[in-house]
Structure formats: structure tokens, C-alpha cells
Length: 208
Image (cartoon, rainbow, N blue to C red):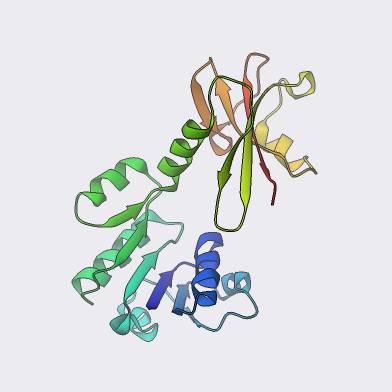
């Protein structure tokens, strides 16, 4: 397949590397040339620097001959606009759009866009692997396995911010989120508060 990827961040670059290794013809667009440093040295596809909502840039990237377009930039608006351009202007039928905002994801999926919402995915994943027992559960991805467990807050962590604790953590295990008041789950990037003794930590570790 000829596949055009919009956005060469962690997801876009990893996807490009995987698809390239699988033998697909891959082109990837990003506004920053430095982002292409995330691509493997063996990447054999095309990398184009430019604004992805620019029609000329998309044509330079070969969108007119693409079988699929994947929009995975960090900006929901850019992903949506590129997807609509791919569909309406270039008549691409196979389009996948990443949208962070769950409310917008629900709205645009009703308009016929094939959407992926990492926020919804993460919440669903945590809910499926965690229960009220303090046991370790696992999520298996294509190239790695992540384990999750629930732990009480150590006394040394009480009153501290999660971001500070994760930055100071030299081990592989990270604080993925916090359970507060028994049933409210906050992901680590939502925890702009200090830990309390009654909180519980959701710990994650990449084990292979």
C-alpha cells in the first residue's frame, strides 16, 4: 500500500517505521525537519517538510496516489482539516484521524471519519486491566508489554506532585495515574495536585 502519514511525532514516526518494515510505501509530512530524526536509519520512505494543510505540500507528498492517509499530529484541528482535504479534494477513502478530545472524537466519527482517540483508549485500557484487587495486570502491544499495578502512596510521596516524582524516578516503573476517593481515576498528565495519604497509585512498567 501507498500510505501517507501526517505528523512525525512519537506515534507517527513509530507507525512509519513499522509500515516501512512491513514493505509498504510510506511518505511522512511534518512541519519540523528535526522530527524526522525519530525515524529509523533504515527508513526507506519519503519525508517532506511543510504545513500539512497546504494542498501543494500534500501533493508533493504524493497524496494523489495514496491508498490511505493517517493524520496523527498533536493538533486535533490539523488532523481534522487534513482528513477532510484528503476526502473531499483528493477522494481518499481510507483515512484514519487521531483526535485527543473525546467529545470531538464522538462528533467527527458521526461525520464518517475513522477516528482514534488515545484518551478514550487509555481510559478503556486502564478500566479493563484494573480491578479492586492489588494484583498486576498486563497490556500487550506489538513490540512491548506494559504491566500495571495499584499501590498505596508511600509516606515519602505524600504532599508531592506526580510530575516531580516521575522526573526524579530512575527506575522503569512510572506513576501512570492516581485513584482518588476510591473510584475517580486521573491520568498522570491530569494530576496537577499533591498526593494524599488516601490516594492510590496506578504504576506502569515496560517489561519487554
